[in-house]
Amino acid sequence: MIQQSFLLIFSQTPFTDLTEEHREMLDKIGINAWDLIQANSGGHKCITNISGLNYLGRSKRPPQGQYRYDSEKDDSPSVKFTKMIAQEFEKKLKEKIAESK
Image (cartoon, rainbow, N blue to C red; front, top):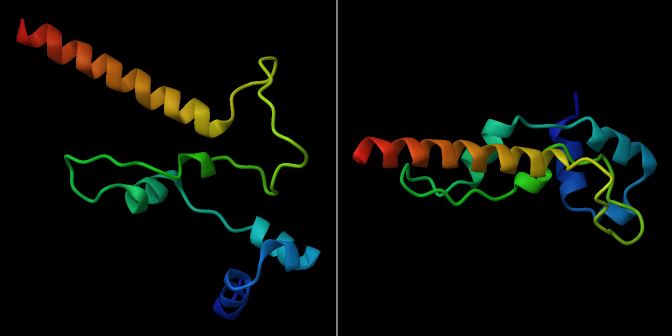
């Protein structure tokens, strides 16, 4: 388990200045998706300002080189998750519209 003193040092040190050992320790830290959504939402049940979804399933290290979209590769976990939310929203919206007719 990473001690709080290490977390304080890590949070105040630029990533580029961390040692490989420190980076490996940070690689082991994770949070669940629901906590991320709750922490980044608007806080009101009728307001949904979800941000930070791009952190879901991120690789352990920053991408190397210039990022380019590759249609041959699968979507990242955050894109898959966002598409799933959009599909569920569309389904519920269609149900509500059908009920109102």
